[in-house]
Amino acid sequence: MGKTGQRNELLDALKVLFAIGVVLAHYSFPGPLGEIMGSFGTVGVVVFFLIQGYQSRCEGPSQSQKLLRRAKRNSILFLSSFLLYLAFSLCEASALGLLNEYLLKANDYRTYLRLILLMDFDLFRCSHFWFLAALLLSYPFLYLIEAHPRSRRWFWMAIPFLLLTKMAVEMYESATIPPEWFDWHASGIFLWGGLPFSLLGNLLAHKEESLQKLNLYWLIAAFLAFESAFLTTSCLLAGSVDISIVFRIPSGVILFMLVLRYQGKRRFRPLAWYGRYSSVYVYVFHHIFGYSVLDINAYWIAFPAYFLDWVLPLLVLIASLALSFLIGGFVFCYRARQDKRLIR
Image (cartoon, rainbow, N blue to C red; front, top):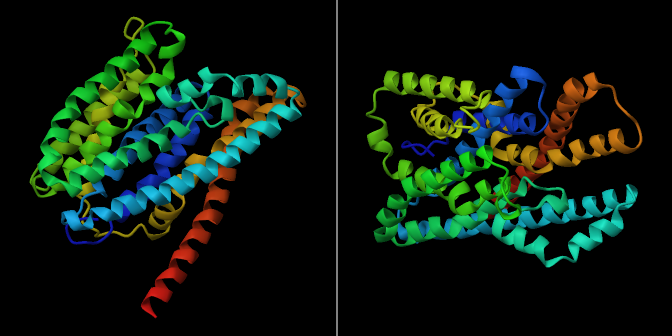
């Protein structure tokens, strides 16, 4: 919500574009086009956490209970979709004749240590669930901030240290062959992979009046500079270190600040509706389509290279958008009925 109490439709509309970017980061087109589209998706992940923190702002401690309700709702989404992926991974392993190997890993305590410590959901074919887990784990901190306002400054003071940790971890992962317990999953640990951005979004929500006073043109210039540097470094390596994260984070933060300046003069109704009710499902379910096609390619039908390069990303994207539209429509109708009952 903005200062006027109206929902920021531009922010909702951007959720759709960011969700598409995430899909095209996981199933990318070849060459620079794929790098650019995938990079947009990684910026989107930063913005999604900022949105969570921004929308967690409460007018007073008495309203902080709404965060617990959101956490409950998101927990239901997490658990139900995880069970779906669990069933999918079991069926996939059985169909491919890998069920014994799957069960051995499922019975290994190290699998669950990695799941808890590193948010490693790879065995269950939902590696992207680190994002949902990080969102859930951020809610208790946001609740404390809103329920106990005096604690805010201590959480806000931790933001730069957590962001620097995120940068250091990700650059280290790109510079060396990390050990088993420090692979790419380490950069997604919620303590620095999600929490600092949620805390920053909360800080921006409480400082929104000050943000409105910032020079719009300087913000645009800063965003273009950081985004250009990010797109350039995401395709290059400085020595052996990927430094693109140094520009990715400010790109996402400044873009978010620009969107907060939106005053509602233009409408983005179709995209805003889709972003509000369906964008999360694009992210959650796209791997089911992608892994299914890749399994068919690996074990049954060898698709030509152009299909995997150009058709697969579009196929996964279209299927994910269609499914998420159906789920979002159902959620919208359900909430509308609930609201009517409350009015009666």
